[in-house]
Amino acid sequence: MTRQRSSRRKGRGYRTRRVNFREPAQRFLIVCEGERTEPNYFNSFRVPKLVIHAKGYGLSPNDLVKKAEDERRSDDYDQVWCVFDRDHCGAEVFNAAIQQAQNLGIQVAYSNEAFELWYLLHFHYYNTAVSRHEYAAKLGDLLGHPYQKNCTTIFEELHARQKDAIRNAERLLSQYLPPNPAADNPSTTVHKLVEQLNKYARH
Image (cartoon, rainbow, N blue to C red; front, side, top):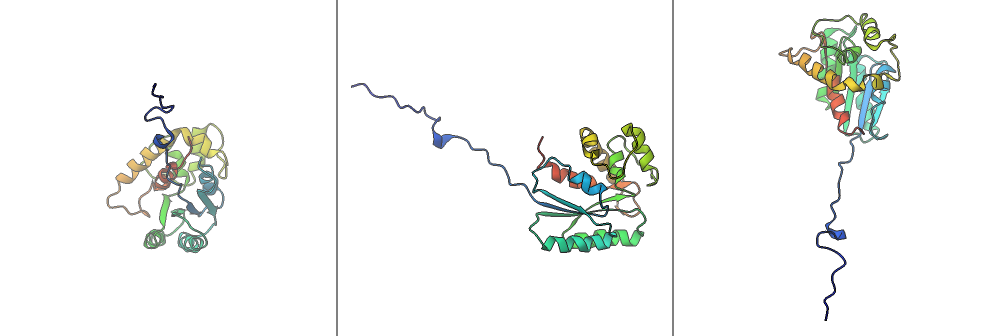
């Protein structure tokens, strides 16, 4: 009697198929000082729709931290971030807002002096103070067109240079030991939020 061969080869059956499991994307609440500039940037990340909830409120840093705490209670978020600038904020108020956020388990992506420093770092390493009034002109020269503060396409324009910006921001922070965010001009921690979001980005 001829022995029938199995129609399934060893290691090729249904039970032996490898299944690729992906970590579920975390949900980010990003509460921004700027009403449009920062939300426009973060909402442009190439991530699943439910990952990012970024909103701008036009509040002072300490009021923004309180707002983030209130918003956190309204839904289930894995990471909560505040995004604000040194700008015209007093030094003690600025540092106190960062400390207050950390005490509440809220992370901070701050910039000294303004959020546009993060954009500039996509092009060059800056380790000398740049007035917030100079950012627009510098960005216009680098982008090749006038910089519009509430631009909705800035993420796409800068995306190819993002790794350079992260490297420049890290290098900049490393020179301030011990760190004093209100006095460390220029400095930014926006790259830390960007790195977290990139874990869930579609390429």
